[in-house]
Length: 92
Image (cartoon, rainbow, N blue to C red; front, top):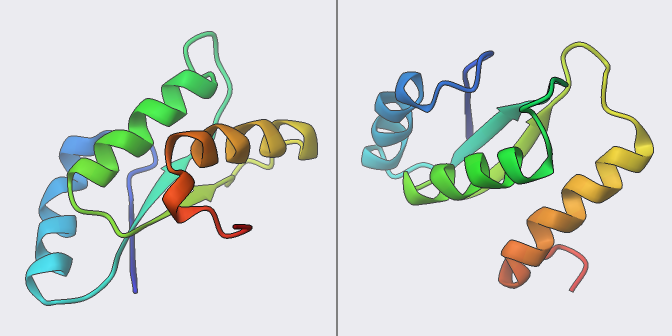
């Protein structure tokens, strides 16, 4: 598995790497860099996840490099991802 991320969540910077991983027949993990701001909310991160899936990512990771993600918000975020992708729910 190869984890691909961009610290600014600029998916344009991730596309070539994801395509290369998939072309090599490997598992591509799209990593979302968590941060907080008026625009970085749960729907924003869900939209990023959907775009990463559209690029061919097989799995999703959440990077919390600044230590901003609280347990409560983690629960909300993971639940939002599971609601969008019930077929990939690891708890099912």
